[in-house]
Amino acid sequence: MGSSSRTTRVLGIATAATLALGLTACSSSGGSSGGAKAGGSFTYWSMWRSDEPQAKVLQQAITDFTKQTGIKVNVTWAGRNVSKQIGPAIAANKAPDLWDNASGTVYGATASEGQAADLSSVLNMTIPGENVTVGSVIPAKYLATQTKDSDGTSNYVIPYEVTSAGMFYNTADPAMQAAMPSAPTTWSQFIGVCAALKAKGEPCIASEGEDSWTNGLYLDYELDAQGIDFAKLTADKTGAAWDDPKVATAVDNVEQLITGGYIVPTYTGTKYPAQETNWAGGKAGFYMDGSYVTSEVAKEISSSWKFGMILPPGATQADVTTFGFAVPKRAKNPTAAEQFIAFFMQKKELSGISTVADNITPRADIPAPAELGDVQKALAAPTLRVDFGGADSGDYYNKVYNQNFLDFWHGKINAAQFIAAMKSGQISFWKTEG
Image 1 (tube, rainbow, N blue to C red):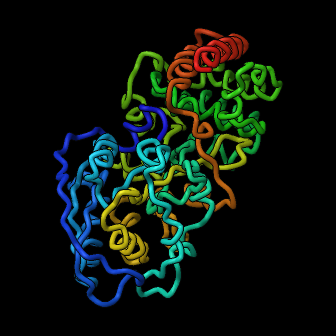
Image 2: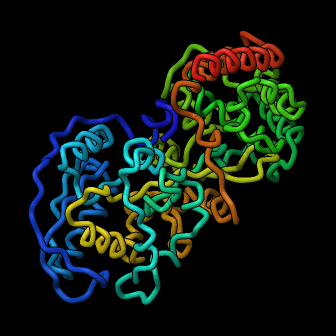
């Protein structure tokens, strides 16, 4: 799923939930994804709490599905704790038939252990009432960003929601309009925008000082602009990859934000959501974050605010995180669960993710909420990427990257020292890890 910081931000604070482990026996129907009443039931554990908008959208779809097919859905709105419960449930042979989460979380909890069903067959299922297949409305580029499991497939999650990260700003801000009449295409142009904002007394960037993920996205995107993949860079056991001049260019670019005084003052001593609140109050130009930020600040911004989003100049691809359905290999009623997946992919059902939950769906024919229009445009690119190459979790991130980056971002070490610290730390890490 990514760093612990991002997990908290994307998904909210976990609420403990008691999961009903008992499964209702049923006879599932095969073949068609809808149509005649088939009867039976299946069990679904969801990552959403019952009071969240995604849950309301899914609950409506469950009601519609049962009415049309006769299949009862025994749903538990488990909240984020579901990812910790799924493994033990599988081990006890009490797995649900369906669950949902971010693809990275599904990978870590089940797919990496060979416990997630291959849902390629679902891609070939017909969406009820639309005469098109699931695979025809779910672009393959989203599935391609999901880490391949032990069986060599990335089709263990069928996404129903996608998010991306970028530099969000208020297009109605007069200072921003003057400083950035058009989106910068080079890093030097971006620094020019920052300088113009600073001259008007407005910091260019709001930054949650303790967050190595959101702030690190500047580096990740600039490495991408230089053709460097973070995952490959950090996987080099010799550390020599850090000597690449292109790495130095990316790091030097980010250092200009720090040494130029373009970040909101006192950022190193504040914690989330202090700077997000400052940004929403018009006290800074840009805020790097995931697309969920528009919902987070919806009640804080002025009525004149209009969201825009750009990627750091030079970035070749937007990053994406997919959220969707997964079926454990030990599910007792997988056919019925797969029918529901296809049912939910109907435009009339899935549109609620946009209109009610204020997020983006993988279907290009479902418009994003107005505030996420720029994000949907970025995601319309032919290919997408995963932030940090999918390497923003686990021991390396926590033991090597996290503190070294924060020291750099806080100005405690310079660009050259940061590269040296990453290189030496990486060598030591891989000697220990083998």
